[in-house]
Amino acid sequence: MDQQQLKAIIERYLEGRATPAEQAFIAQWLDEIEPDEFFSQTRDSIRPLKNQMLTDETAPDDTDLSDMEWDQLEADMLAGIRRGAGYEAPSFPGEEKRIIRSLGILKRIAAVLVLVAGGTAAFLYLRSWSVKPATAPAAVVVQEAAPAIQYQLVHTGAGNTKKITLPDGSIVTLNKASRLRYPAQFGKSREVYLEAGEAFFEVHTDAARPFMVHTSELRTRVLGTSFNVRARAGKINVMVKTGKVMVSTPVTARGPARDVVLDPNHALEVDTLSYSGRPYAAPAWIATAWCARRLEFRQHTLSDIIKALENRFDTQISLQSPALGQYRYTATFTAANSLDEILDALCLVHQLRYEQRNNKVTIQAINN
Picture 1: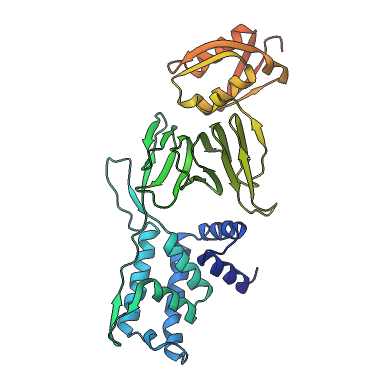
Picture 2 (picture 1 turned 90 degrees about the horizontal axis):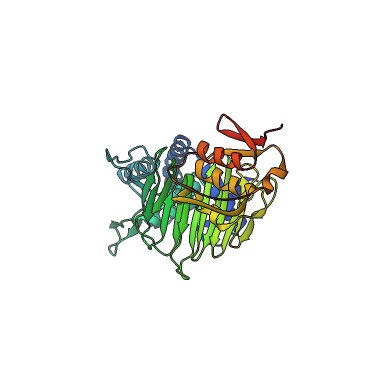
């Protein structure tokens, strides 16, 4: 893709006319900009604007800034980028939550500056965002930009879970070793970011504002439902308990973006390299097995029980033979029962045994 094609896509993106595929492409392109590169590119793009504007006879009169105004423009822009990139992130010792600023607006401006570095269009776009001429011809009024979105960042340790109530009343149960970012206040949209780990969502119904969960490049969109999202070890899993969920995958080298609709008792698992995967049947109770205080099995197959145990204990369990997965069990376990205790009980019923190595469990028949 050449520079002009990329510029055209970004212009459509900024004007709200980009296709879903183009939106996904731009999001991925912007996310790949590292903070240091982001700062350097923007700095190198702002400085040539001054020389071009001073020699551009077609530029409007109100673009004639003094040296001091140019220096202030560069300083303000770079200071904002530094803050947005996390160079001056505030900290609150002893707190699990902290406020961080969105890079969205800054990245959009930087994208335009990088593409049209040294051109009039970049200056006019930047000026329309932050500076307006006053009624007096020679005066300049600096207009305050719209406030940046403030986010809450909540994380859990290796041995605890946490229940969170979002601004709209939706409830999120965050699994151990997980991280969730969400706005302090929802606006016209309800978007949250599961940056790591696993969470079970019970979404408050609001037909006017769909609820969206971002996980890496995957987007899960709902109106009002309950579902589980898990992002670990290069895989993302979405499992639906109630309602309907639409999962959107990004454009990749292997294919276009696609939308997958999941009904209750169904799930989708994709890997984060190809974003390929197919829906499969998954009993609703499996989605909440990890956050339930009790595990109750009523003539459930060993295959289904294994999925629940993998979900709850964050481990991988395999069967030496698929036939073992058809064994059925009726049992109840509490949060006090360890994985070893549960496996011991399951194996005793049907004369099985198991081996554990590097957080992986293999179940097999005793006579093997």
